[in-house]
Image (cartoon, rainbow, N blue to C red):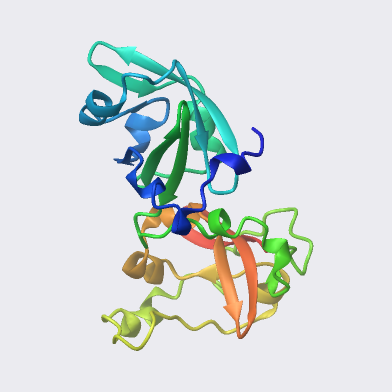
Length: 233
């Protein structure tokens, strides 16, 4: 993987870019983890000059070399595709757009199925430039801190029932947490009932941002035995 600044166009000012051949794919984890089929109609229109090896370029500038394999009337991204999926944490149900900018080079963007947006770290790759983003946890979190089994910091599903109605247009789904010693020194558990009511179950695999006033913390979650808690951050 290497930098590829020259292959990323100045999109807003390059009218030719919007006319370049492009297509969109729905990513199915079980079907597309090892290979991805390109649309047949797109190949019919634009695939005559494609080489055996292509280069996939993400908005961050990273490049991945993948094999384009012709199978009868179908074309697939094969060798190298699984590395691209793994390195970019592409998840089931993501939408991925491909734009052929020249020869063998595709500019690629992915969009989260839940919110329709690309991941924040793809359009803000160097978050270190922002003084209000805290990437380092305030405590030593090299080890996992699962919630205790005594229920003191567990899922208060019964208490959350009152919040499960559809929120008004001017409010966001929320839940309350009473901070105790376990919350402060170990971890914070998110009520499973809240998660099921407002989020996709697989969303815990993505990074989450906690925001307090004008400061932001990047955190990683863990889910085991239908309990979700803050793993790092």
